[in-house]
Image (tube, rainbow, N blue to C red):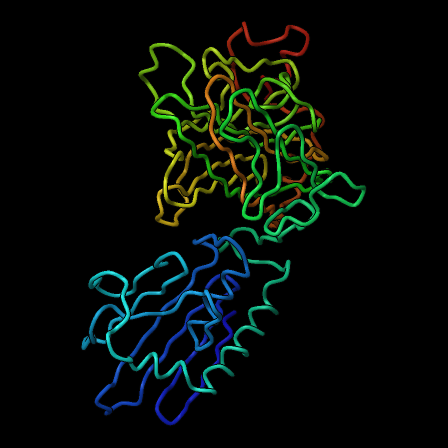
Length: 420
């Protein structure tokens, strides 16, 4: 359902539209017939373009409709007037978000005050900005948002989410997140490990998750001074039975029980020609399997893909979606603000009541491994009685019809891995 506000003034008509909590569209049109008759329109797609935080989003939107706090970005035109009426650029504090219309030149302000600069000084423009901010704040709570038409509805679960300014991280009884090892809280990120040798750190949620279907969005950054193949080792995202257990698997225990998603930045296996690193892979473990470091976890992985995520200037995102025993892992790492498929695996059985966490480790080689945000959404969709019966509670992690090498299996509980 779209909410639209239209304001008509002597010289301008401007319209704000908030569509399904996912998209904000702003349209500004001057009065027809004037010598400076122009039109501008732009939009922010909140779902397809994950933003660092609501505060930054509100700053960008508020200044773009006439209110520009010190230090915020501004909506600027490329150099000179544009007679075709095409849109200018939305410019943030560190660069453009996007450009609507033909790309003309770099980001720059006109040498003389433009119609836009004159417009944004109007008092009624500031009033419109305040009204828009009020509507955005009303719609910024943990309410539902649609993922895709005909699919599920997402509800942000704050008890399983973490973002700046990282309140609720610590050792007190009221904390929702705990740090372990060398992990430390910074103003703009949580650093799991610094770019130093032999470090490990982790961040764990204290609240067990009892959701049937969920989606975890992870905003992270891996960077360091090491040259090609002289950096490591990567980070992991966990949904496991045990928490706060240091170990050799990207800073977590071996033979874990649950799901591990690995962003591996260093190839341990010699003669590695089939895949390019960094590499994303996933593993479901019932406590009987060991992660094979020498072979980069290949014997037990569910699948994987190459993901060039180290030392890049774009924001890097990873999403893990678990719906009706279907595991999907996607990434947004190339600045296009679109999810790319990485792993698709049906028949994944994950018990409820496990914990979310993320960890990292360095050895002789190192990197900075930073987490900017973790956001968990509950996915609610219609289930038939047959689906409810099929997807009844699970007590041990497994994957239907997944056949692993005999050397990886414990003879005691091999049967849990080949189910019908």
